[in-house]
Image 1 (cartoon, rainbow, N blue to C red):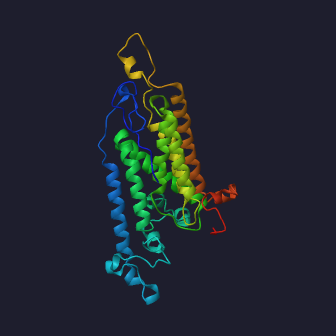
Image 2: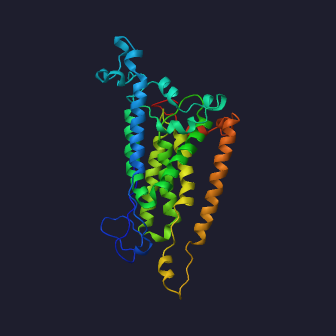
Image 3: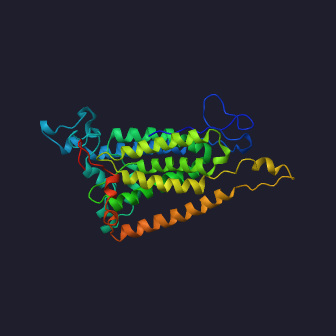
Amino acid sequence: MANRDVERGGKQNREVHNNNNYFYDESSRDTHWTPWLVPAIVVANLAVFIAVMFVNDCPQKINGPNKACVARFLGRFSFQPLRENPLFGPSSSTLERMGALEWRKVVHEHHGWRLVTCMWLHAGIIHLLTNMLSLIFIGIRLEQQFGFIRVGLIYLVSGFGGSILSSLFLQESISVGASGALFGLLGAMLSELLINWTIYANKAAALVTLLFIIAINLGLGLLPRVDNFAHIGGFLTGLCLGFVLLVRPQYGWEASRTNTSVTKRKHSMYQYVLFVVAAVLLVVGLTVGLVMLFKGENGNKHCKWCHRLSCFPTSKWTC
């Protein structure tokens, strides 16, 4: 996954510099935050993965030349055989024990905490590095602009929303990873661009670029063994949260505060409308999803074709 950098303007009249980024008006510039939460999340994910591999202890559980662990020189941190886990990681039983998302345990054994813990686990080193690099590229810029509280809320709630949708539709397998939270940050970037449309230059190009990035990443979720429902749920949750948490004053409001002859509302009417609609959809969506989940509902019974959103069968693979 990738993102489009959003930079602040350094000159008046929303001048666009030669690097083709889109900029804010100088008068709308706000605090430039020093990012620390995103690096902390990266470190936490790395620490959790190390702990999972310690618990996994492949050499103690797998013996024989045909079932040799990968990178045995790492000792108990070595990986499961590639035929079992091609991502260089632990066994599925270890992930399940450490808090992976599993529908039966969430619903029938009341392990609701798995809706949160699963986003801190990863299936392998490739999975982990891909997600953490994406988090750095996306999250650092957002935290610099909006601070750790709002970015942290979007990350956690989006991951939670992705877990809910995943549990409703993928009930025969376990799921792990921070992808739902990452897609929430992408969704928030999109809604932030839309709700603050008037303060940007090069807005159309930025919108097309961002939509292309989102489409490519959602398209990759159609491959086998990828939980695209977590991606979709996280994206929709982050999209709504962006409309609620990332609203900026409209262009020209700051200047009107010092000019008594000019009165300009801090936010435009369309910003208020998007804020209210997104807040309602967010609360209703999460509530309905949780109620359906803990009642034991299967989302595939209500949407016969939705299973294709997570894996689309082709001549190259089956789902």
